[in-house]
Length: 137
Image 1 (tube, rainbow, N blue to C red):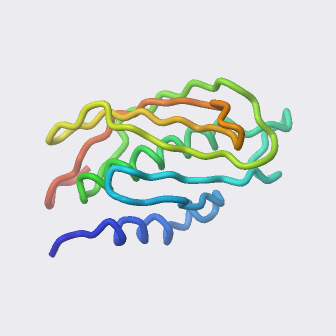
Image 2 (image 1 turned 90 degrees about the horizontal axis):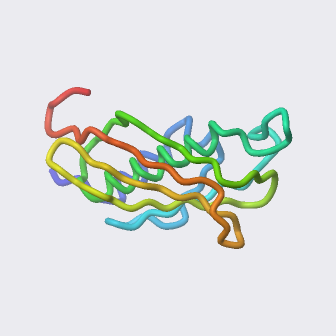
Image 3 (image 1 turned 60 degrees about the vertical axis):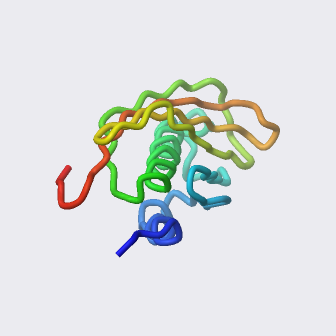
């Protein structure tokens, strides 16, 4: 049975952690995914700005979501690098990703988070294992 892009989208939307973070899928198609987070008090750090873990979480999600939309199979993050470029404490942020290289078992992606004005807040790259068939992580 073929896995559909809609099935993959629904698997993310039903994820307890995804929902706990307050992430919303704006667009989800094969090769094109965009997510949004409205910044609320519970995601701020002691400085009153968005916690770095939230940036990393969004970058991990967007890259994995894009990869799964293309491969129609599971994946696991092997490495995630995040560059924090601007502090933000309110409003909406949006994440998108690109595939830099896709092999049979490994993929390398980059993601970007922007604010509502298009200013880049964070960037990141990730290396992912593409899990084929009954293969385990």
